[in-house]
Image (cartoon, rainbow over all chains, first blue to last red; front, top):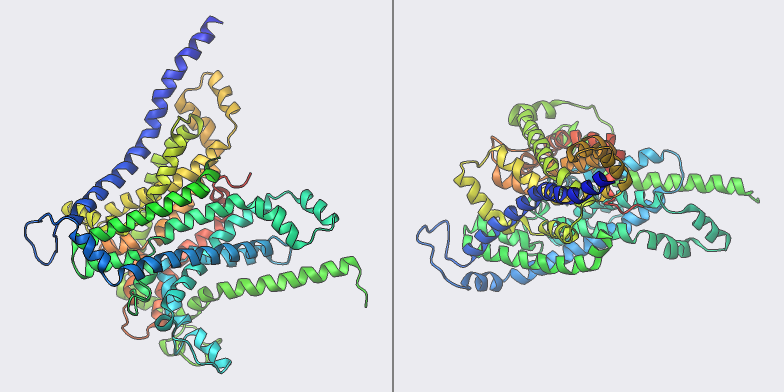
Length: 299
Length: 278
């Protein structure tokens, strides 16, 4: 009895130290990874610093910020960023849900269908962009133009006429399988007895979906929204490979605008100010998102 | 004609199947078309109407290997993906374990903060990272990429592992502790065997994300440490219609990870649920 109570008073302290020792590396690494570049970006955003004009880095206050935010591309870029994330989220969640419901039915060759459906998720964004830019959307030789020829319609010059929609299409194609993967697994754990009972009571497909399936999927949907927002807020590769932000600023998002400023105009100061704007936007989105779905995640 | 229930069921079964197959083939079509195009000549690749039957050629593949040394880029992709994933797992497994089994007052806040660091756009810190890498003389080297990949995926891996560990019943651990197991015993002999599934799927997702990562590889590498994603991006310049060659390069860049993904589908899904499936 004595020895037992002894261990129970000793263990908590020993455990606590060990536990903190285990927790520490990941926290410290991420903290450094966040703080060092962040403070450098902050510093650069307040000085005059252009790689083309070497010289002392003079403190110029908020000039970089006002320059970046009065750039005629600033508001289009901000708007495009939000449209891009929002549209992709809606498309992938709706399509992912529909596909998950479909694949959840029994039919022949379901395994292969599933494999085909999730494949786009494994494709590199750069390859994804190249496939769509060349072989699908090319106004002369692309599959889409072949289809519109077949219907005697005028082929659309996708990347010129609807650049943002084209990028949204590519990204949605890649990420719908991700939503599908998560919804599919979640549907498999749904209570079938409950569903059968509802069916016996005369509930139709829609009411079962609305009152049983959708509530069951609340958490997976939250996860899909969360993870995808993280990835799409700073979407880069697809724009880099296809539209280059154009024509004009039609497909420029915040990430691309900053990239352009830093690596095409060599203006580190202004680009850093843009980086700070992007970080602020990300924080606003993160704040709302974590409030909306974060609680759902940690329960 | 009146159909009985089982006949109706069969019809529904076939109709669903047919529809599902059509949808699946449509969504898979771009990939299929890429693979088909890679076996055509440049002229066949842009022929109108598109060729469905032709004599396949392997010339594009030979040319790609010859011109851009595919193998070097593939190895860079492999080293950075595996290196980044292993590094992240080494850090994340003990941390996630500690957080799941001995949560402190702030554990949940810390986890949410970790996830929120992923929302910081990479471009926001591109310049500092570029400069630090340059100062260290490590531009176009795989080591900074390995570190960045590890840090980039650490929050998501932490999340996946945390939710996975949390599902392990605490009683088992208590029993082990009663038997005098130390922390490391516990981790190695109790937690690890029970959570291979979660660790594997976190690792798999991380491998896929690293392999496909384009932003940092495009910015920080050139010909020495270039990964396949960066190699493909270099084909985007409008130097004319080389669809067949681009397709061959793309197919070679994606094939390893697609085949890998197909084989590991079940494993991957297991941990992708982030604890969403109860």
